[in-house]
Image (cartoon, rainbow, N blue to C red; front, side, top):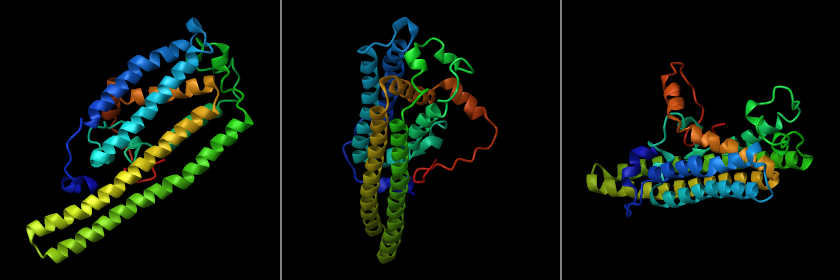
Length: 276
């Protein structure tokens, strides 16, 4: 519904399309920030007390800057973010209120925690063979404090995610009620109906922009909480994994293989659903 009625939203001086910003943002992540992070975690450049924290901080700041840019774009036209036709078919199933579901961040952490009891020399992922001992062992013995903190973050998400979904649905229901009432009062008068519907959509879009910004605040907070709760080596592996996940969405070969898949996919995630 939002996409169909976005033509009635307020006219503003158009900014640069967000898809152009995102393309450059992904390119910077892939070609400028991710390679030095990986090099700093390899045997050829054993992690130092200076370089590794610097690279971790740069990627974390890059991720945070993305959500800052999303907030600015939402103030112009939240419809382009809630219904992003520029997202490819591999990205869309993971979207929740316009971007990655925050549970994906905690699920990634859980994937590291769940491997903590595996033996170092048995079934060790091949990509860890070229990494120093500090990196290989980073997630082997997580502290009780870390496990407790991740539990707390997940409990917070179980409260915040449904609340944001409820706000989005309430805004949609209010729009439907207002449009129906205004349309009936206008009794077929085209210009009057257009003005009335436009006002209803304007109010609804402002609320959706607010919901979107709050969803970004949750995503930013979860990322920051994870990075602050982990050691520098754990944070490096977490951010490397998340970065590769984001970069992988734009891999042409992977996307082509995904689109050739003939098996029907039934995704539960949508723009206003809880997703995961």
